[in-house]
Image (cartoon, rainbow, N blue to C red; front, side, top):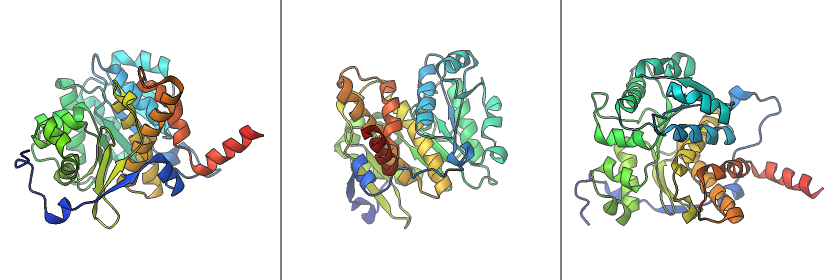
Length: 332
């Protein structure tokens, strides 16, 4: 295997150990979402702004938005093609859906002055035509402004493909070091970002996820069997985790869009609690896979739909205390 065209890794990076995690381990260690305060309101639990859904891909942005809702985000907005608004409201009226056709029309939804606490989720259904390119360029240019202190963002799907195809889309090399960014490539997308083949990524997944974390200075979820999560911990040390949950039924369209929505919602809630993007990525990945495992127990793995996960996500993301209370009530 030739990995010579990946940027060289320093010696400590190549020695990064992988720690196994699962939903049960996070629950045991009290790393699920905590109980909410009795006087909490929607503003306490984050605002997720999904951006995507070009023609032919409306469902992707809708699924990401729905996943953010059941994952506990206080507010969920979606900026998509105007033609999709009616379907979105019909399917899920809780989503604040807005029609846009250009980067200029997107600006009010991502302007920092009023939306500092928003988590942007860009990529689901974005496509790689002019619409998607302009939206991604607008978002990246906005967070690059010197006056922008820090923004939280999830970058997925065609957001990653566009970044790989146009690494200078903003006129300079993209660097997320000043922001709370989580990217979620599958092996083919990881290969494009690293300029290597999918086969090379799969042959050394640990090397690939670490290389991505270092190249873009962000948290990375490399999807696949036993997804890998890499990023820097509170001590600025590069660490890596392997999610043990999940099953082959997840190999169907839309699963990645659901994951993006979960990540956006968890990141929004974790920011309010002062927790890191790495912690958010760990929980979101395990919740997503745990929900798929629970859903497959009821209907099997073959034919498992991405939207089948929605009720199980809501169950999996609750704290241990809440689950115990629910179980006690059911026993009564």
